[in-house]
Amino acid sequence: MAVNLVMQQKVLKLLEEKDMDYDARGWKLDGDALGMNFKFIDKQKNVYAVVRKKIIAVGDSYKMEIINDSDELLVVMLTVILDEAFHSKRS
Image (cartoon, rainbow, N blue to C red; front, side, top):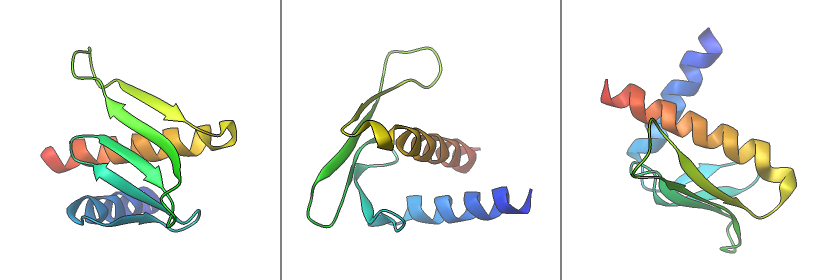
């Protein structure tokens, strides 16, 4: 429970900043995180994934273009965390 709260606080803080980094991979979030349209890139601007929120959908739906299959789970998890933080912030 405490870990979840700390994670939510960190993600909410990230959403308030323009420059978001995911340090474990050296990734940066480039784009509109609040609008949920962004890319995961590294310092050299290499793109690892592109995430776009579908506008016409029931619930929250996303289109994800993930370059490496090995990054699939990480990209999905980070997107879910950002989405949850966004909804928590709006409540």
